[in-house]
Image (tube, rainbow, N blue to C red; front, top):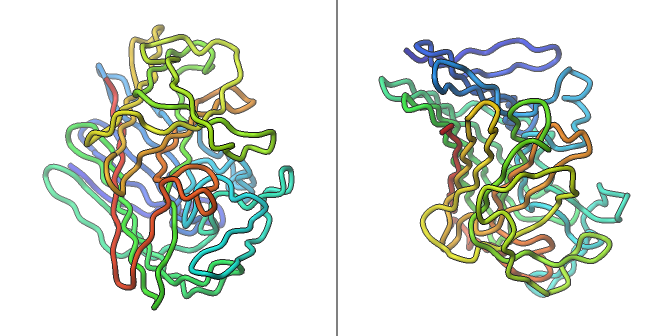
Length: 316
C-alpha cells in the first residue's frame, strides 16, 4: 500500500512517500535542509496538491521565499542578528539585508541524512537527521536535529521535530516551519479561520514592540480578499492542539493545519500572503519573532536534554 522512493530531480534527490491505494504522497528534499516540497491529499475522489512549491531547480536552489523550509535554530527575525545569552554577546550573519536582520535559522541549505524508514499497513514514515558541530558564526551550540515525515492511511501528514543539545552548555533555540498552502488559483478567494490568539505588534522592521492585541479577525471563516496579511500571533487558549483552516468554497474543500501547543510546543503562528497571492503561509513556531532578545517562547535545552513537537495537515 505504501512505498518510499528516491527520485532524481536535477542536482538533488527527492524522497517521496506514497500511498499507492489512493495516490496521496508527500515529498522532501534531504539535501536542502529537509525541505517539505509537496503534499498531495485526497477528498471525495479528488487529489489536491496543497503546497505552493518551488517550481524548478533554479527556484529550489535560491528559495528566497523559504518555501517548505525548516526554521531552526531560530524562526523569523533576530534584530540586527544580535543577542545575548549566558552572559555572552553573539552576532549572527545578516541574511535579510532588506531589514538588516538574521532570519529563519541556518539549516535550510544543510544536507540531512536518512536515519530511518518505516512502512506499515497504517502509514509510512522517513526520519532525517542533521548533526551540527557548533561551527557557525554567532551560534556555538552543537545539536542533533531529527525530523520525521509521516503519511497515514487516514489521509493525514504528520511532521515531528526532535532536537538534542549535544554540547556542554545550555542551548537557546526556536523551532518553526514555513509552508505555503494553496487551493485553487488565488488566495484572495479562500476563507481563513484561525485559533484564538493575540496579534503581535511589530515596528517598521518587523521586530515586536512588546505590545500584543486581542485579535478577533478570522475567528470564523472569513474571506481573505485582496488585503495585506503578514501577522504573527501568540495563541490565546493553550490546549493540546491549535487548528487553522483554509477553505475553498468553489471546490468545497478545506486544508486543516494543526500544531501541538502547550508547554514547550508550537504556541505561536505566523500567517502570510505572499505577493504572488497564490497561497497562504501558515507557520507553526515555538517562539515569537526576535525571541533570542525578548525571550517570549524562547526554548532552552540543558546538555543532553531533548525537545520534540509535531504539526500536521489533512483535508476536510
